[in-house]
Image (cartoon, rainbow, N blue to C red):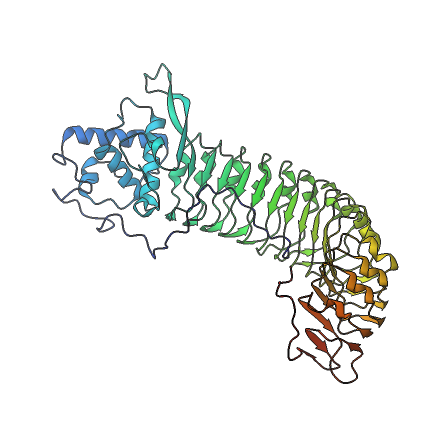
Amino acid sequence: GDGDGDGDGGGEDDSSEGGGQTPGQPPPTTPGPSVAPIAPSPSPTLEPTGSPLDPAKYDRYRKFVDVIMSSGVTPAGKVASSAVVAMSVPATTGQQEALNWIAFDDPLLDPEVDPALRIAQRYAAAVLYYNMAGENWKNNTKWLDPGHECGWHGITCEKKQIVARSQPQVQVTVEELMVTEIVLNNNNMFSLVPGEIGAFPWMDTLSLQSNLLGGQLTPNIANLTRLERLWIDGNKFVGPIPTELGQLDALEEADLHQNSFRGQIPTQIGNLVKLRRFSAYDNKLEGTLPTEIGNLINVREIFLDTNKIGGSIPGELGGAVELEDLRLFQNKLSGPIPAGLSGLSNLRVFYADNNDLTGQIPATAVAGWMSLVDFEMFDNNIGGTLPAYFGFLPELAVISMANNNMDGDIPWIICQTGKLRKIDVSGNSLSGPIPNDIDECSSLERLYLDHNEMGSTIPTQIGLLSQLKVLRLNNNNFEGPIPSEIKNMANLVMIQLERNQLGGSVPVELCGRLTGIHADCEVGNAPVVCTCCTLCCGVEECVVPNPLPQMQKASVP
């Protein structure tokens, strides 16, 4: 949209801290070669007490490996199966560092007694710390403390019934604190989000907004089957949006905006029938809009602006009947607005400017948008006339259709609801006059009719537009005298009348009140007399008078 609205939806950010410093590269967690030979007895990574071959330590490590591997949290190859290797070779993965910590340095859990889910949870949280350079976070309070992981900064837990460790024949449940939220916004986190993020089966909120996280989003996100809020906007994620996102059937808010996601929006997005907001603006998405997007029967907000999405807008989108805010601006969309969108009776905001859309605005579609407030399609190739149906939309406040190919007269019935604040149809091929009953547009604050083929005289009733702040009539074929009644427009701050066939004078009452007055008042046989214009135009050029008249310092709203 234009200045009246930008696509800036986003999940709430709990963090009020300022932006963190951006180190060039995370420091290596542990110096040493990627794969080292097994030495007989070097200094161990985390300095375990006692001999590296202490049988009790060896046994404890092996049991933790068994629990973690059988839980499927970490793929084989990320950790050493042997305690001898773990204690003698410097760790080269966050997974190995986390396993060394939980086996050798952290006495809290017993691999023979504590539930496997609880062990996997604590281990996975430690992997997040080591993988994402936890020592550099702005807030890492209590992380890797000996207390419960639910006390670590940014982690919220609830008591859940989980399967206890017991004999194979008997399944006993036990109450444990399990992670339900991880919120680490604006925390100077970098590197990749590890696959172990999928080890929190009760998590309903994952919020990592405004960090420096990169790489591809792990497909293990699909394991978070209870996830309702995924807020990872403002990072450096690349690659495609994983198709596995479509398995999160509890998801209500997906904020992926301001990253570098590429490729096609996956068709599996249509599986997310509980989704209320899908925000992926300001990425590098390509391809076309999947027709399955129309399956999102509960979605309220779709923000896909500022991408490279092409093709046509699918008529199936009309199936998203709860949609209130649709932002598709600054893409490569082409073709007409489909009549199939007529079912969007809750739509309040429609931004599709800066595309290659063609055809006429289908009256059948617009007539169904009874909640519409803001309609913006400037900078496209829309033809035909402005639909009179706009006059029957009771809440419509903004029509922004500049720089298209529309022609014919403006159907001024569009003002009849008394809610219209802005009409911008500049840069088209519109003709016809401004009607004598223009005062019925009494709620107008901005009227931009410039760069068209409109003509006839300016009616005196224009002075009755008491709310009008900006009036742009320049570059048309208006003729006759400038109506003195414009002096009655108490809220006017800017008026542009140049490049017409107007005569007479600009009312001196406007002098000193406005920030800008433009007219055909260049010296010589100037058709317009103006003692305080800020821009005077002649046959060839427009000049700023010298000295510039004293005007208001306020900026044009």
